[in-house]
Image 1 (cartoon, rainbow, N blue to C red):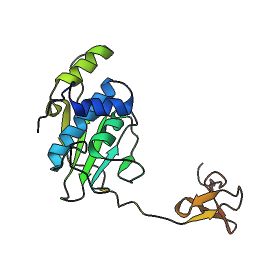
Image 2 (cartoon, rainbow, N blue to C red):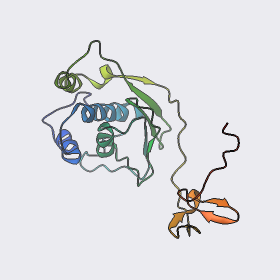
Image 3 (cartoon, one colour):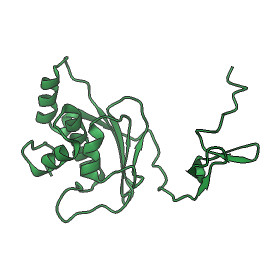
Length: 188
């Protein structure tokens, strides 16, 4: 597998079509997904004839930028499947796990040596090998448990159906998080 993005290739075009436009952030996510696939010993999701099993590859993104769209397309991670999670810290960092072989890695985007315009940054990310863009390190965050299915109950205040793991009890009533008021006596 090549570690270099092919801006004319089918995979890049598929990622751009999903996201809606080309940009530096999308390129960062594309490069991170390529590198993660290599380090985790897996394949890119968009390759013909290859499909990941549910939750095989897990991504914990430390940002909610354009980059995450590339990870979704290339590695098959999604919120709905439970294998795309957010640990929002505003960093271009991603922790990836392969549940099948137990491998994990945190990829942190390296700082550029000098300030660049948006166009220069885009070209920089497009023309560098993913191994040149990221520091690969041991994960800081543990592998999350697999997604679970929970029952739902009606909030006894607003009447809306709410997943049981999001409910709180107050005076014996089941309340959704919008209706529940936390106890703040010790927040002084």
